[in-house]
Image 1: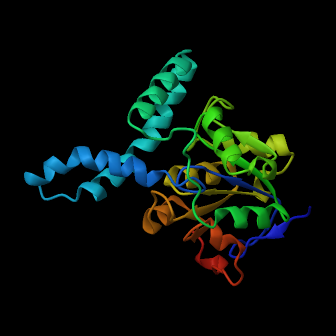
Image 2 (image 1 turned 90 degrees about the vertical axis):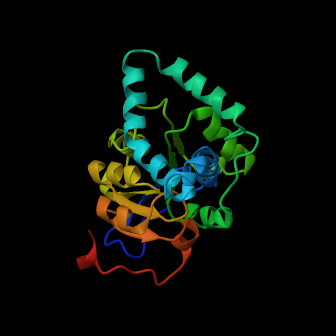
Length: 237
């Protein structure tokens, strides 16, 4: 398996790292819908769009949330905190391992890309959920490595998860691309010296992803196997 060029990026890519939520896993809308239900009563008193506000709150919480998880890991409480969080999600009916939906069309794209690139998962989810998702959709054989919140001390947007994945595969970060849907994903890739491919199928919106430094913004992972996707290099952030 050799390297290849992802259209719109100016350098050969050997490895592609994929985020899960909002990138391969169609769960972001579930989280937004759940929070929006709690915010709806506020619309009686304030001029707000509950769904729009819920999406924004989830985005705002990602970076400090990941930093907090890093802190709990440092003081040895991460297992307890993660266990509580997983229990609460199950009580709310969210993210149950038997029901982790794949974004439509992604399966075929991943199989096509696996013939040209080395691939890995890089996610802040726990290993249990990540492996359950890959097994549910018969995708595990496509990925050489699965990097989860248990794999590194620091989480995205810190560069450690990207550098860890690149080191494990023996590939320079400059020949790796991280595909994710949030500004935290983009910042993690840029800080690690990797290419940042932002996807609009999850939480992130084009303007914020471009401001974060995305080299390329696509509608979804499925667009990665199409031809003719080209962003002039002098226009890259």
